[in-house]
Length: 132
Image (cartoon, rainbow, N blue to C red; front, side):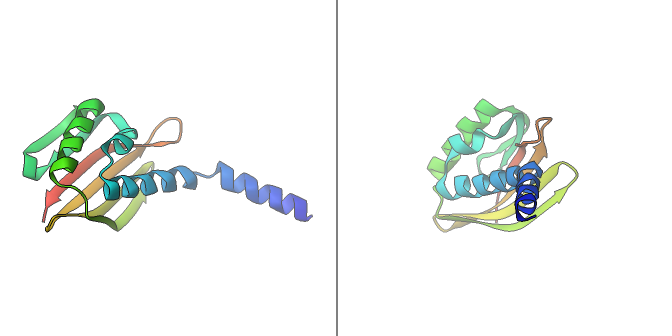
C-alpha cells in the first residue's frame, strides 16, 4: 500500500505542469537579479516583444537573437542591484509576472509574459522595462 502511494505521488509530481512553470519563473528572477541576458534569452520565443523605455526600444516582434543583444547592452548600462517579483499570475497556457528591477538609484517596473509551447514548456513572449 505504501509503495503504491509513493508511486502515485511521484507520477503526479512528474506529470504535472508545475515544474516547468516554476522553473521558468525562477530562471527569470535569477537572470534579472544577475543581469544574465544569455540565460534569459535562452527561453525567449523566436520573436519577442521588447520594450525598454529609457533606451527608446519598442519592438512588437523582434528576433530573439537581436533581443538578447539589446538586453546585454541594457544590463551593461543598468547593472542589477536587485530584482524582486511583485505579482505572479496565470491563465490558460499563459504565465505573467511583474517585478521591480533596481540599478544604481533607479527602479524599473518589469513585465514578463510567457506562453506555453506545444511541448508544454514556457517561452518568454514579452519583456518590458519601464522606469518608475
